[in-house]
Length: 68
Length: 551
Image (cartoon, rainbow over all chains, first blue to last red; front, top):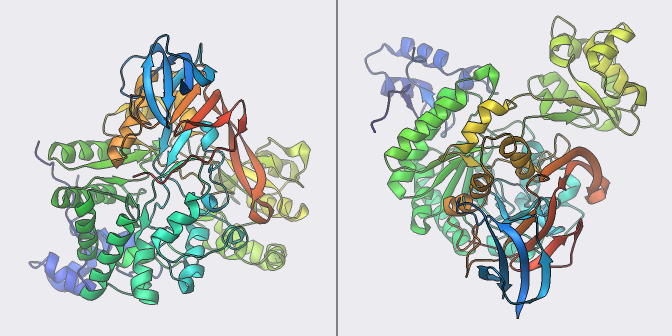
């Protein structure tokens, strides 16, 4: 059985910043836009967490919007 | 002559095969023979009209500290549970340096809602390594214990305070690998980690600071032993849960280890959550990965009073801050018009009707008896107040000792959950036994499986027994447990098929220092044997201390 397509994600590398992650995961998207998109797709990190935006090594970071 | 013969019961042996009327003979702590007309035993147990099954195995508990003063993990044993897995959710009591005890107690207090007195007045804390903890509990066990070691404590042991600040350096990861290896050598059955929990100050627990390379390195050690990785995923978000399933699948395939995540809840508000997760699990199993979702049997009920912080207020940070204060300050804050007005404002523009209105007043030492059983909306209407104001005022009027029940917050639809529990890839577990003491009773899920799902036709008697005995033992690699067969450990429960159930939830004050917890008595359990010795019979615990550390 092949895997069905699910929402793409990455996990942060050691000491990686949001900008570095955005550049790695979305190299074809301008960096400011990529960081904004990633923030919007990952409210569990960038809205719900305290301190807001604290990215942890174990996080799932989505690099695309929810699938239809 | 055998040690024990259980005579004339319907033997449901854990294999899933149809039960047969037979005697079960026990000698030397093991099943000696199963058949009809067996020779006499020094002790004879009449099981006519009863079911004789392998002892139940609970794979998700937090009895770590209770086992230090209560080797029966009461009331788990009387519910027929003969083996438990503590150490879940990244937390265990070893390996742990003396200097780090306070930090870990704080995590247990926050995550598992255990009173700090449970860690300070009931036992001498003499160990730092895993073998020391194992030996400390092994002296008085009535149940079998298959302990996990927690990722957060391993991290804390190696990195100290930096465990909650940063990713690990390669040398630190290697030290964690060595430490995990030592724990597995000393009897740990796997590693637990958490992706969601915070400590008592709101900081993420140490395991959450681990990057994927660290977790992979630890799983490589698990692979040397073929042992389990247990994780707590972000169960509130389906996409993240599925991402975690995929992560676990890769770890399982790469290191040839079983993995399990808990909990997996069903809820009407997110109806495709559990079905989507199970569908992904099916896909990953088809690839050869082992990712077992743990699903509890009971609905989510939650009780609380304003005497202590509660999970119920998790979405109301101001309430949490007030309820975390010492009692005198808390009462003062609740009575302060400005503070209480802000709290009420946070409860919503309807005065807390939607958030609190369906709460049922369940009692408490000082609670007004005439209001017991009424909803907060009813009480508030009679008082001419909003619900949040009533919650605060009523509590203040009675010294805060007024308990409320938030019933059926989710996972309550038997017709949806029954087929999921019956699914061959769904692991029945996630009881949280021994945790959340003042919020809900984490005991009796096994009885509820039979009363709610077997007797309503969702699983056969034999399938249900298999699910919580041999399936669990196989998933966790517990040797010679979970079946009634010659040569296997004589962990046995004798119960009434039509009577097995959980009792009503009730508060008791049996924690160290007189601390309160909610509990449930067993219904329909006659006799429980652990390694061939009768540990519970006729409604009472015996002096048997035949439990072992099992691997």
